[in-house]
Amino acid sequence: MRTKIETKKYLIVLAITTLVFFGALLVSNHFSEKRLAEIKSIENNISLDILSSETQFALLKESSCKAIDHSTAFSEELNELAQKLSYMEENLGDKNADVLNLKKYYSLLQTKDYLLIGKVNEKCGIKPITIIYFYSNRGDCADCKKEGYALTKLREEYPELRIYSFDYNLDLSVVKTMKSIYLIKNTLPALVISDESYYGFKDPEEIEKIIPQLKKIRQAREKATTATSTRK
Image 1 (cartoon, rainbow, N blue to C red):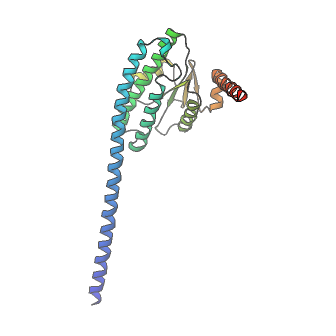
Image 2 (image 1 turned 120 degrees about the vertical axis):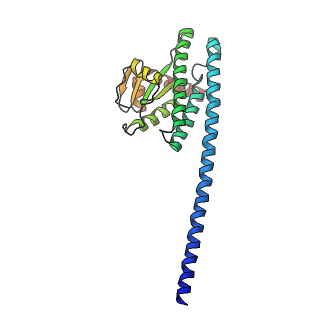
Image 3 (image 1 turned 90 degrees about the vertical axis):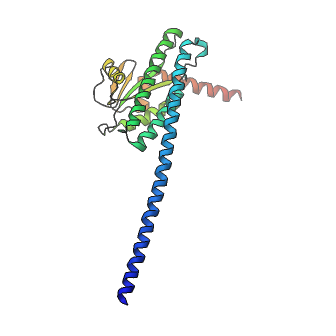
């Protein structure tokens, strides 16, 4: 009798354990499928962004100086694409083949934008404010993530500022050429500002000192805000 009770108890425990296991498995599969669907949607959106961006390049090349918004032309699309890639990198990992391929596309688009802005400068006489940022995701750059946050903060504060971010270790000829042009050493994070290279973490205040135009922009905004408040 006692043996029957023990056997029944074990069977009940086994049944409960099995239910919990398969229940957890179903929940896990559900969330995995949901995450994969989200990532697939992002991949599709990125493909559309790339096609749209390349078309926009062609249009901007043919536009007159009056038609080009020098402060935001094309930068919003690049920023949105960067956010999507960041999401994919966090979910799939920086070594995932899809992530690496999309990062290569993004690097090419950034380079196209950099060259386009140079042509706009020649054509319209508008000198852009740019920062080229080299980082690493291999765990060998303690300050790279912090530098990324600092640059994001600056970009939000100054829409006129164009920031181009490149993975130092990305196997792409364009990135290798950029490193060669600016003689970038493997001492990251690295910033290129006005053709000068700066190594190690730089907070927003330090970068503002390196780029005095940013301080002038901020002062002009503060002056305009004060003038508007006074008129009211």
